[in-house]
Structure formats: structure tokens, C-alpha cells
Length: 501
Image (cartoon, rainbow, N blue to C red; front, side, top):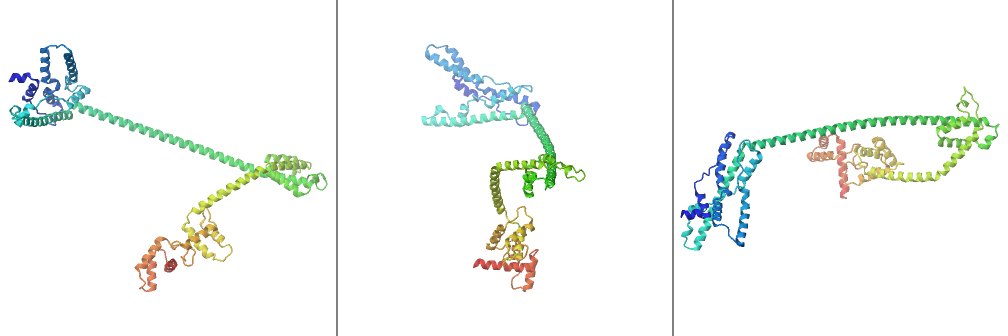
């Protein structure tokens, strides 16, 4: 009866779900000024099936009020369950307003968040029974009733999916046409563009700052280098001046010593006490010139009489007695040299070891350096120019190659011998030099020229007239004469015969 249907929460829900309801949703392409008038009523209409509008909840609430409060632990337990159940529905007690053009974007987002997770109470049980034409009360057996129930449930699930698909389509079309969301998207886009532009400007400023810093550093380096160059030039100039002064001081000291020695001989016997002969005096003078500075030599020269003593225009008197001072200085200098002799020997030994290591490394590096075409050509010429049996043949060959090629690291005779042996023992004659059966021209043959020669030999067979054939072959090998092609062919043939043997 109608009373039973309306008093039973579940039957009431099923009945209300079958009442007439407009399920239509707006089409796409709604204009911005019509958006609120078109979509507002549709959302309001579908809000009827929101979970907080479930008629079963209202019927159950009325029944609880009519029955009153029950006593005992069982009632308390049920009350706790009821309160907990009611807490689950507090989250969906209302729907955020649809709003208008001036609604804050936070409210708009919460509105669509509600509809994206929309919880519908709509029950399609009665509608499914009608469409499947199954009456559970008219079932003949439990199996038939169970089967009918399964068919109805399957139909209910399908209708429920279609209902939710309709709601989702409504939400998607509304979000696509909502001018507020469009405005927010445009604002986000402009903000991203602004951030990108700010980032680009920041990177440009950073690059400009790096460029200016680099230019500044380069300018500082250039200025520093210029200062260092000036200092080097000044130091070089000062060093040259000091060398010149030392050279003049040595020359003056030698002249003054010799003049004093000659002036004292043979009248002054004190000279004999200083030096027995002229050779010993010269040894001491050279020792002092080697060990003393320009200032010290100048001091001794002044003691001997100074520059005027050897100047023909001035003719200052020379001090013979100063020779004793020169001798004493030579003795003291020689003693100092002897005290440092051990350190000097150790330093020389160390220098010899270091020099030997450097020579060995240089030799290894030089040995690993490949021979260039110019060096190979020079080797070929040298082998012809200096035949076997001559004196110091390989020294002459190495000297000839180094003079002709002007390398940074000259070739030694051992390298020349080793390269010649490699070429002579190689099965291929491409680029070989020095053998009587190998290439006889000064210019070594390249791999490309050998390939052209072999191609021409195949192109012009031996059945042709001999002279005409070799002219045609030479014309096909660029840069080679008929004679060179013939000699090259003979050298290759001879090498092949040796390889077979």
C-alpha cells in the first residue's frame, strides 16, 4: 500500500527515485553571459539526489523521535552508533553555492570539488524491476528469486554508472564554460609568463655580469702581463748592464795586474815572493775574475792604481805593493772553492743523473714519433747518396736527413738504421725506401698511387703493345711518369717473389 511504501525508508527512497526528473544537461558552447542562467538551475535540480537530501535519513529521524529514548546499555550503544553515523554526514550537509561572476575562486573550486565527488542516494531498484520485468514476490522458488535479484542488481549497477557518468559530464562541461575558471587560468598563464620573463631577465643580467667580470679579468690579466713584460725587459736590461760592467771590470783588472807585474820586474824582489812566474799569476787572476763580482774586482783595481794607471793620457802611478793583496785574495778565494768542492761534486752528479733521465725520456719520445713522408723521402735519397761500405755511412745519412727536413728533434743514426730495417723486412713495399728492389724514385709512392697503378694494370692488359700500354698506364696514374710506373711494377713483382720464397 502507499502507507507501507512511504513509511519504509528503503521503499520510500526507491519510490522517490522513480518520480519524474529532468536528466538533461546543457550542451557545449554556452556563451559566457548565459553561463550562470543555464548551469545554475541544472546543478540546483540535481542537488535533489545529494546524500544529505536522502529521504531515508529524514524518515529514520522521525521514527527515532516518536519512539523516544530507551534505557539500558543497549540503547546507549545504539546512540553512540547513531552519533558516529551522523558525524559521517556532517561533511556533506550542504553544497557550496554556485555563485556568480564575483564569487571568490576558492568558493568556486570547493563547489566543483563537491560535484566531482558527488554522492547520490538515487535508488534504481524499482526502475530496474520494471525494465527487467522481474517481480520478486511472484518468484516460484528461492533459486528463481535469487536469479531475479541478481539480474535486478546488475541492472541497478548499470543505471548507477550511467547516472554518475551524466553528473561527471555536467561537471566537465560546466568547468570548461565557467568564465571564472577561465579567468583564473588566464591569470595563472600571465603569472607564469611573468615569472618566465623575470627568470629570463635574471639570466640575462647574470650573463651580462659574467661578461663584464670576464672582460675586467682579461683587462687585469693584460695589464699584469704588460707589467711583467716591462719588468722582464728591465731585468734583462739590468742584467746586460751588469754583464757589461763585469766584463769591463775583468778587462781593467787583468790590465792593471799585468801592468803592476811588469812594472815590478825585475827590480822588485817582492813580486817573486808573491808569484814564481807569470803563468801562476794568470791562474790566480782568472780565478778572481771567475769568482768575484764587479764591485770586488773594482776594489782590487782601485788598489792597483785605478783606470788612470793604464790610460796613456792620464799616466797615473801604478801600485805594485797591491799585488800582495791580490795574491791574498786569490788564496782566500781558492780556499772557499775547496770548501765547497764536495757540494759542487754532489750537485754535478745529481745534474748528470737528471740529464741522463731527460735524454732517455727524450729518446723514447723521439723513438715513438712517426716518420713523415719528407723524412722517408730524405732517407731514400740519403741511402742512394751514401752507399754501403763508406766510412761513417749512417752518421752521414742522419746528418743529411736532419739538414734536409729541419726537424725540431733530429734523427739519430740508430733511428735511421731501425727504420731502414723495418722497411727492408716489410712484405709490402708501399712507402719503402733504400732497397735496390724497392721504389727507385726520390718521391715515395703512396697507397692511393699504388691502387691507381694496380687499377691501370688491370685496365690495360699485357696483350697490348708494350710501349703503348705503359704510356696509357702512366696517363692514369697522376703525377707519375712511364719510367716510374715500370720501375714500381718491377719492385712490386720482386717483393711478391721474395714473399713467396
